Length: 301
Image 1 (tube, rainbow, N blue to C red):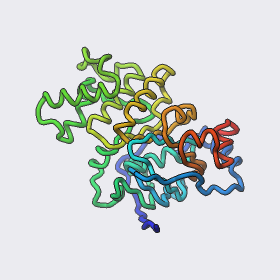
Image 2: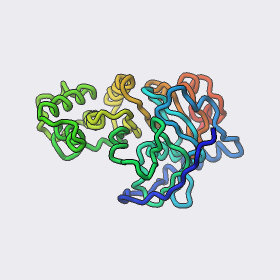
Image 3: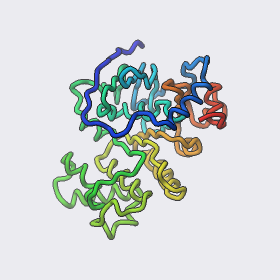
């Protein structure tokens, strides 16, 4: 199969505060670059699956003249958890954001390649981005509840998408979503309280409830536990496992232990290249690429 290559300039909708790279990321990238010097970075493993939710071929991403993703091809299996791992600056979060066009907001971003959701082009100029993001929800690194009540945080999406015509229907969606997020019993008697008053772990579960309230097919998670304590992290990991039978989940994580615990498949990125992808057990117990082994054994990262 020779997929068509589609290149387009992405216009900024809003400026994102901060630079794309931090000094810590630069140091990590320098160490990773030294580790990969002179190596063949062609993908090894099993990038394709029988029942893909996403079909991604020959994807390149640029920020101006800087190339962040280099000719990446892989499938994301339906109703599976796929983990993206790799050192800081390797491109895993950039690639994740391609899946629901969050990179549209980054000035001078350009994306080329074939990115398909259920066989439909994500970047078709006629694509309704609001509808896409209803199907492909996202949970960010830092919990970001709206400055609204717990109830209204969850009800916001169903309201704007017209998923409930009556208050009783909206109540049902809110309760169901909070139950799925494992938060209902903790907040059911204070739904009018502000969402920002919850603990960090509760806020992140509220954000997950908000994401799933519009009945998405996919949930993207960009380091969802990085700002949480171990107890809250364990609860989020349990939740990911519970949700995986209903949703397709893609998670970016710096924790290899977390990837090993929650994912079915793991993809290792290195300086914008997809170096290895396969069943999680195989990637961690018998990696096929020297760089993957070096990373998971802590030689760099």
